[in-house]
Amino acid sequence: MAISQGDTLPDATLVENTDKGPAQVSLTERLKGRKVVIFALPGAFTGTCTTAHVPSFIRTADQFRAKGVDEVICLSVNDPFVMGAWDQQTGAGKAGITMMADPSAEFTKAVGMDFSAPPVGLIDRSKRYAMCVEDGKVTVIQAEENPGVCDTSGGEALLESI
Image (cartoon, rainbow, N blue to C red; front, side, top):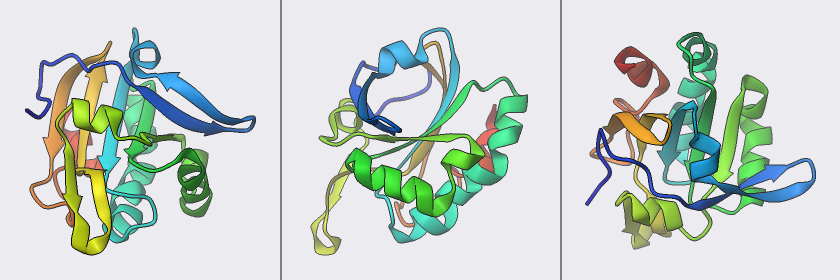
């Protein structure tokens, strides 16, 4: 069953590409006592993810901070090196967005947001969604019905909901 508003996120080990290399991150520890926006998408360097989803959060990053959001995290089932390269290509990090990898889809599967589309090479990937989490508890979640569109899960749409 997919995660929903009011649920507490399960712990998972994500990976962040830092200046010192990949670093494992306990999601529970990262969220403790903080207000965080997490947006997840099917894959780095893919069409809608690159042209619409990440740019929507780059445009709105400062507005989220103005609403008391401590961190904006982009989550994808990729390895941390791909996420680091994508960060460089999109400028997400410069805008204050943290790129995190869920390399084995541990978190994505635990929250019931995984899907596969073998004809296009996407296996065990994340559905497209965005959520606001306060101290590990989901306060708002907005998921797309179709992974190829970015309407309700975009930065502007989530910003209006929190």
